[in-house]
Amino acid sequence: MPPLHGATAHIDSFIRDHLPPEDSWPEMDCSVLPELAAYPGRLNAAVELLDVMVAAGHGDRPLVRFEDEVWSYNEFLARANRIARVLVEDLALVPGERVLLRAANHPMLMACWFAVLKAGGIAIATMPVLRERELVHMMKKARVQLAISHTNLADDIEKAARSSPTLRRIVYFGGDGGSGDDGLETLMAAKADDFENVETAAMDPAIIGFTSGSTGTPQATVHSHRDI
Image 1 (cartoon, rainbow, N blue to C red):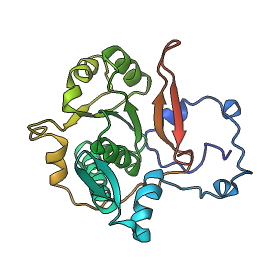
Image 2: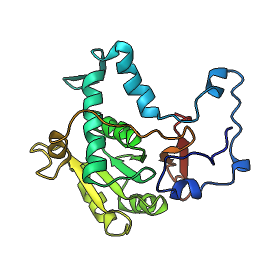
Image 3: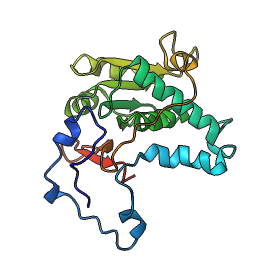
């Protein structure tokens, strides 16, 4: 496995600084898929999965089907870029900061996940069944700075925010009446649909997945752009 140290794009290095020693990490044997060992030192997973696909000519193909909606690669990319702009320009996200994502299966949740990675942040997706206690633990453990949530899950995250000193802003989307003048859809509408992607290091942390906690306190599992 390539060493974690090196040319990170993360300005906020809290997660990188608090990983276990590298000699305790799982061994990654790339001999079966040698192309994995050939990944460049700088890699942004969201760019590879989305921007590169559009550049390759797949922009008009359907990417997401949700109820009676269909989003093409082009449409999805435009939304992700607008959200990334909101994160950077309105919410002052810097690379390496953590963004908690809270919704049931929803295309906007997916677009937010891509936007966080494109902006160099670390995405923490949470199951909608989690309540205040679990959210507080996650937010404190990862020192979460920002959160994006569907309006129908506002109660528990609002309660959790009162015990999460590092959280500086929650932005909502969805709901029958939209999410208001300061909601994500409104903020997105004022943004251009292009974005200068952050050139993260391949080994920069990209997501944190918390375990269920069924056998104790939920553990934070960190995955890099290269892992994805």
